[in-house]
Image (cartoon, rainbow, N blue to C red; front, side, top):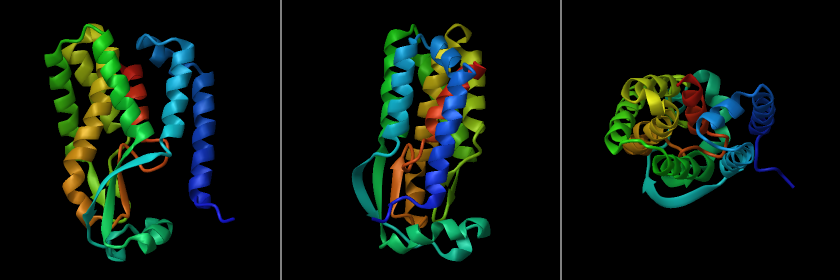
Amino acid sequence: MKTPFSPFHLFGFILVIGFLIAFVQVGALTIAFGKLGLSQHSAILLLFSSLFGSAINLPLFSVKAEAASLERVPERLRGLLQQAMKEFKGRTLIAVNVGGGLIPVMFSLYLIRHNPLPLGDTLIATALVAAVCHAFSRPVAGIGIGMPIFIAPLTAAIVALLINGEQSAPLAYICGTLGVLIGADLLRLGDIRRMGVPIAAIGGAGTFDGIFLTGIVAVLLA
């Protein structure tokens, strides 16, 4: 039986697992989740729920889209896109990723409810991060939306410290994750029609999404 995952994606998944194990061993995640008020058991549950949930995309609707020409795809990435481009049939399925979209949003709502965060601070911080993410994100034909990996966590940490230093950890996670989702995903939905991808998942596309790591790194920096 042919596996639905390419060797590249399988290797990437194994690499991420190894990275996460090492991350837990050095205590970085323990520190981050501790600053958010989570127990070790709750932290592990959240971590692996996000990890395995990133393989699940919940379909929402589909839109007509243009095929991505090879000329618009970076030379070094063309070999990785052949299978996806063959499957493209003129429509893009818009979905929401469980691990990279749904779970971070639900956890952000949990943090808002259980921390003394003024609503105004949260809205302003999220809007600022979303604006930066939108400015730095770019649609890449045949792939999706791309953005430098450290832009969001650095921005979220700085914004959280400036707006509410006493509650900087939960605020950094909230504005970091929601800012990426809004600025680099939701506000970029209009670009989906020109990228030639068969599926565009809000919050990820079947791998451990950068949105979750954005929140964790932002908390550590804050």
